[in-house]
Length: 157
Image (cartoon, rainbow, N blue to C red; front, side):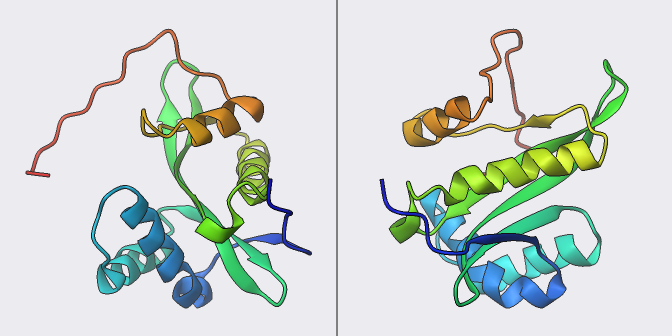
């Protein structure tokens, strides 16, 4: 395990953090097989922040370098009649993986759900992303054994 960088702070991102978020978001997309697109990343994240359509937390280490982020989207559970948060993105720079930064981002996301009175958080990860699955399960997340999840694409991949 890599030692956690000294003085990592998890802060809620605002529009002023966009320049720092773009390379992390672009790295996240590349991890999932997409080609690099800084302009597209800037436009997408900028729009989410401008419209308050997501909540983004960024992990910063000394001296204020961005090292990871998580992005949460609001949703609702009709069954529980409560808000839920979808943890859609979680990414830590490659050189700092297994350092505890991702766990800290997960903890902050859980705290956000508590602060907003939400029922909880949901996420999905790649079937082959075993490292992430281990992290989630060791952090108290549970694999859904009750429901099958499906998706429908309305445009070509």
